[in-house]
Image (tube, rainbow, N blue to C red; front, side, top):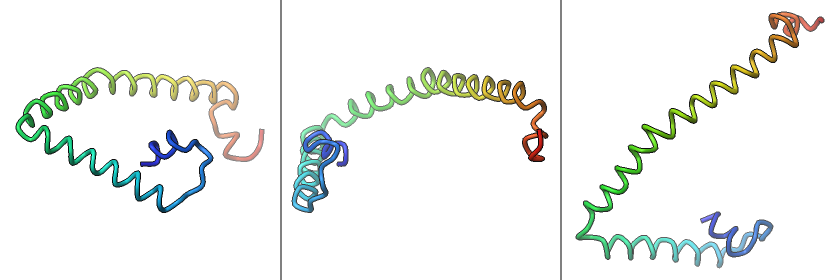
Length: 94
C-alpha cells in the first residue's frame, strides 16, 4: 500500500486516513477480483508461482550470495591490509 501511495501522491505526501482507506479497499478488492476470476485456474497460477520461485532459488539467490560473500571478503582483506591483524583497532592503539 505504501508503494501505491508513493506512486499516486509522490514521495513527500502527508498521511491521510481517507486516502489510506481508499487505497486499501482498492487493493483488497482487486485481489478479491483476481481470486474470484481465476478460481477455476488455480493450478495455472500455482504453476507460474512455483516455476518463478524455483528459478529464483536455483539461479538468482546463489549468485546474490556469492557476490555478497565476495564483497565481504574484499572488505575483510582491505580491513586487514589497513589495520594489520585487527588487534590494533580493538586495543585503541595504532
